[in-house]
Length: 190
Image (cartoon, rainbow, N blue to C red):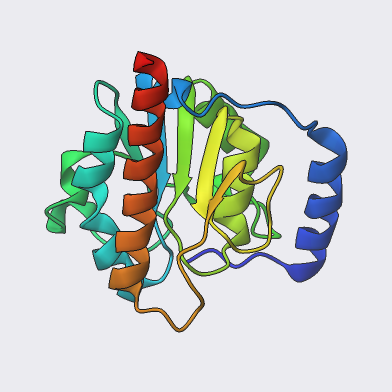
């Protein structure tokens, strides 16, 4: 699990707000686009199993594209039946700054992947994942409503408070993605 230095986080937040401009987003296009999708997994091992079990549903929602999974926890991805089916991206120690933020070289590798969607499945506050979402510059950045908003996420899904069990929160998250896709398909066919 990556720990971000609080002072570095405050400085990064300021830099991100100044660097990123608000852009209009066509969320419906993200369901028909064929560029890659990056899914950022939770750092907490107890949430990881619930999040990983939703990966097939995410692949169904975003068909015809390569789904890439970013892990920051120290698990063996080959031991997990859902994760091992997808392309894995793992930041190593040389990809993380001394303050716990992603290095520019790591972000450049992600940007070269031609991402159209970035989904943060960490239900808890995780500034490392949020920074990766913003810096990877995928047109659509989706995460749980954690009060960060732009530039980190341009779609935040409210799955309830911190007292909601992870299983229910992930069910609500996936249902919201299904509803967004269904809504987009009905608008596109009209």
